[in-house]
Amino acid sequence: MKKIWHYVGVIFILFWGLAPFYWMLITALRDSAHTFDTTPWPTHVTLQNFYDALATDKGNDFLGAIGNSLIISLSTTAIAVAVGVFTAYAIARLDFPGKGIVTGVILAASMFPGIALVTPLFQLFGDLGWIGTYRAMIIPNISFALP
Image (cartoon, rainbow, N blue to C red; front, side, top):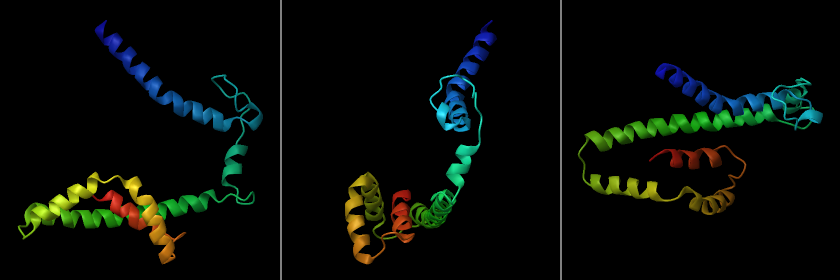
């Protein structure tokens, strides 16, 4: 009996966690006239919504936006991992003068809220002519990704 309640609990948690994804999928498969239907299954299934999102002839550039996101995220990840690994190794294994100061500066910088940097970064990147470039996204993301 105890095992049955265990499985009931697991099924409930799975349902609770997967229900929003199911609802998102059936809403995406409904035509626009039936978007707000509350039936738990789609009645008028269509793939037109996906075509509308991906079609470039309608003024959308969804695939271009995905490409930009990949360029920014992969560049940020690669650079942050490379810099972070070497920095962490140096701080953990090497003894050098000012090691405590460097560690303190890293700790203090991680306590600074990232949102407080938005306006100064926007002004700086505007002065440098970087607005609308990849480096205006990659450099701050690297600094936020590193501790």
